[in-house]
Amino acid sequence: MNKEYSNGEITIKWQPKLCQHAGICVKLLPDVYKPKESPWISIGNASTEDLKNQVNQCPSGALSFTVNNDT
Image (cartoon, rainbow, N blue to C red):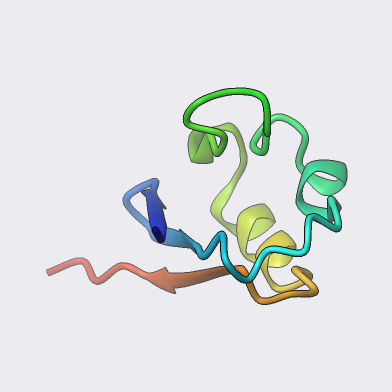
């Protein structure tokens, strides 16, 4: 089941079936991605730009984001 996490500016989508557990997310933003916690993504612990940069480095494409509209 896909999960979504939002900070108001962006929404991160995690697709667990695509995840290869490379650990890039945890290595780059350990205050955001905590696999042993629930929920495991604490999106408020990083800036929107840092989150975008990290998600763009996800090798499997399991993490993606959309920019939220201000409407």
